Length: 219
Image 1 (cartoon, rainbow, N blue to C red):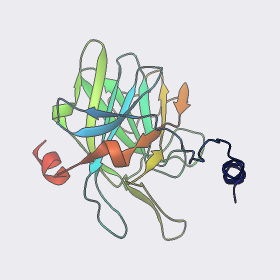
Image 2: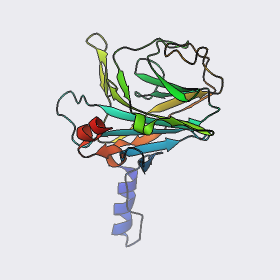
Image 3: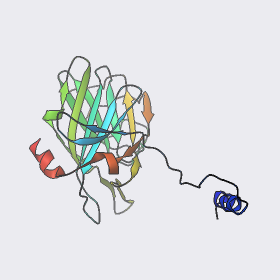
Image 4: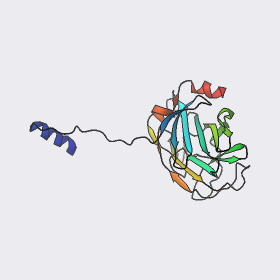
């Protein structure tokens, strides 16, 4: 029995008042966000640098292996060199989505890291950039992309890891203020991050979208 429960029962026996024991849980760092461009509902986190990372998922998740498409939207100040998102909540051995501005366009690169060096390309996560939610202006750039392969990763040797669509999930971000080496090339190398973080996203309550497949097909 927990000490708090013992104290509560003892207080009740003595006719004293005591606080009711409660469960402790981390509050999510994300907020609910409905995108005016795509109409999708996102779980959104904005860093101190002013970069927003947003995740949208289907309302109906398949049973079993829980493989499903996801949507990532990144909005960042135009002077950010690159912004990255880690679907597994850490730098190595999970899909990384790296984006950066290139003139009037935004480049997306699928990567995976095996150590603390510029991560190689990752072919197991495929992206379709949504033009409706992708644009550049004088102050910010934004990209919206559908990912196939970001909800489950790994192999038979090391096992598989899945994005949990029902509960709060610790995901991760990083960014660099210096531009990538070759902005027009999705396979460009880039420098080490200037900052990183591990916010908690409430996917189960903020990111789910009814008729997800039909909505993203129309975008």
